[in-house]
Amino acid sequence: MVAALLVAALGTGLLLGQPVVLVLLLLLVVLAYLAWQLRNLRLLQRWLEEGRRFQPPESVGVWGDVFQGIYRLQQRNRKRKRKLRKMLKRFQEATEALPDATAVLTPDDEIEWWNPPAAGLLGLSYPRDIGQRIGNLIRHPDLSGYLRGGEYEGDAVELSSPVDEHIRLSLRIVPYGKNYRLLIARDITRLQQLEQMRRDFVANVSHELRTPLTVVGGYLETLEEECGRGEPELQKIIATMREQSERMQRIVDDLLMLSRLETERVSEQPEPVNVAAMLAQVCEDARRLSGPEHHQIRLEADAGLWLRGNDQELHSLFSNLVFNAVRYTPGGGEITVKWFCDDSDAVFEVADSGIGIAEHHLSRLTERFYRVDTGRSRARGGTGLGLAIVKHVLLRHGGRLEIDSRLDEGSTFRARFPVARVVRTGREPTGGSL
Image (cartoon, rainbow, N blue to C red; front, side, top):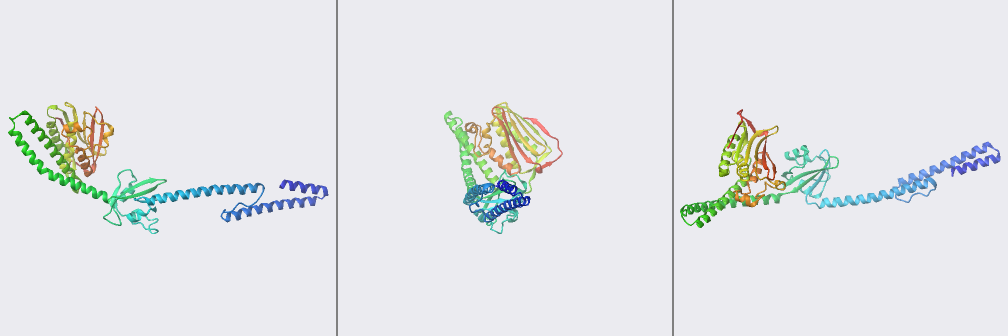
């Protein structure tokens, strides 16, 4: 359009033969063009200031294309915003429907948002607690350590609700985005009550069974002595009854041991235990358990490495692991028992050349009554509770259990204890074969 006006002005000036007229006409054309541009800019400004809610201004040429292009972008953005608002609304509705308390924490541990259950379980109040540090509102050393540690894949933190100390909460943190975290608190009061009821039931039933089992065992022993010259069939029946009675007694003893491990408080001043001497006795007992199968049991123990802990619990841990190796290693097989200190922990290790364990069983071995081979375990005198006892003893001593095993190649059970429990006496390592 500007080019057409300029050509017209130039033609008019040439026809009139007046250069001044030509210049004036050119100036008028330029001014008209600038005025048109300014008008379109003002139309654009007014349209944008009005919130871009109306149809674009009418224009031609490039400005018409500009207005239409901006309008199309607006429409697309409006659709995206509507979709985003709907998604946010659905997300908020979903989080508000969750029974668990949920709160969003910034990289500085400040509370940015929470759902309604968080108000009831954590005592959060809007707008008072927006921007507050979670550690200032829930003051608990376990939570502070959990936040500082930065490793959230382990066990959750259990603590009492700041609203009601009788409510027990399980707190877990889930990282997301750029250093943001989601705090999830679950009410586990009922679960803990049910667990306590289970523990009480097991303890009470075990205590009630102990006396009648002792009486039955005594009578069976008497019958076995009196019927020693009787019929072979009767002797076999009595022997089977006594064997099952003894097995039930072992189960009751193990259940009582587990109940005690779960309910008794851990000693705040554990006594040093001579582990090497204890292992020597355990290996001697294992040799007697082996009997005619003549397992090659070798002990390598650092006699100067003592451990602070409960001697009865540690004896149960060591004997369970060593006796299991005897039960599941064929006659004449090798069993190596070690007690040493590596770069990070004090380590008790039992390695055997036994039947091994399939990988899919390893994660469940410490469950109560879990058996890889039910028939074999019962036939060899196992109760199915030994490794559960081992797990609880290690928990009470701040340790952990490692298991390496391959079918038909043997197994290695490794109990690791923190070096903070180690006591050095300066004695030399001892060893030997049994």
